[in-house]
Picture (cartoon, rainbow, N blue to C red):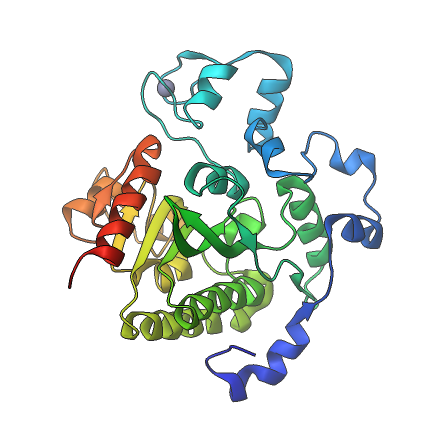
Length: 322
Ligand SMILES: [Zn+2]
C-alpha cells in the first residue's frame, strides 16, 4: 500500500478504505435511493453528459425552466449556450462559476486520454458518523463521480501527466481518508512513473465526519509532494473557488507553480472563522488577487486560457534544458 506512514496507518486505513468495484448503481441499491432522490441530478453515464448540466441545485433549477440565466455577479441575462460555450464564465463580467470535476477534466485534458485510477475507493464511515454513508451516496449521485475525487493519468497537449481533480459536490470537496489516500496514490504514481503532476483543488477543508483521520491526510499528502519534488519532477497546482483549510495547508500549496482562477477564495480559515476574530480585514482578503499581491500564488489565469498555459508550462518544465 503506497502510504507514507505505512506502519502507523495501515491498520487504521484498512478499516477506513475499501477497494471494491463500488459504483453509483451499487450505492443506489445499498442505500435505497430511488428516482425521487436522483431527480434533478445528473447520473454518471459518460463525460459528455456533464458538460451540459449546471453544477449547483440553484443553477440546475434555473436551467430547467429557462434558456437564460441571470448572472449573480452583474445581473446580465446570459443564454445557456453562451454560458456553456465560455465554460461557465459570464461573458459580460467574467465571473467564474463552479465546475464539476468531469467538466474540469474535459476542459483541461486531451480528449479520451484520461485513465482513471482507484475509482472503487470509498469511505466506510470509520467513526460511525450519523447519516454519513447516505450523504456520500447522495453526493456521488449528484456529481456522477464513482469516488470522492477524480485521479488518474491523462495527456495535456500530448504530455502525459498524473492528474487529480476535486469536486465540491462531494461533501464540499473536503479531505477525508479516501481523498487523502487517492491524492497520495496519484502523487506516488507520478513519482514512480516520472510524470509531471497537476492537481486542481476545490475544497472546504478537512472532513469533519472523519475527525483526526482527516487531519492525518495533511502530513501524508505533504510528504509525497516532497518525494515527487526530490525526484526532480514538476508539480502545478490549480486553485479554483474555493480552496480552504487543510487542502490549502498541505498539497495544494506545495507546488512549484501555483495558479488560481480569478476571484477564487483561497485560505486556511474560512469566512466564519475569520469573522470570529472581530478584526477589520482587507476587502480582498482570501481572494486570489490578494494572494497574488502577497506572493502566495504565482498567477491568476482565465479559465479559457488555463489549458494552453498548462501546455506551455509542461513543455517548459519537461523539455527545456535545465
Ligand atoms: Zn456577469
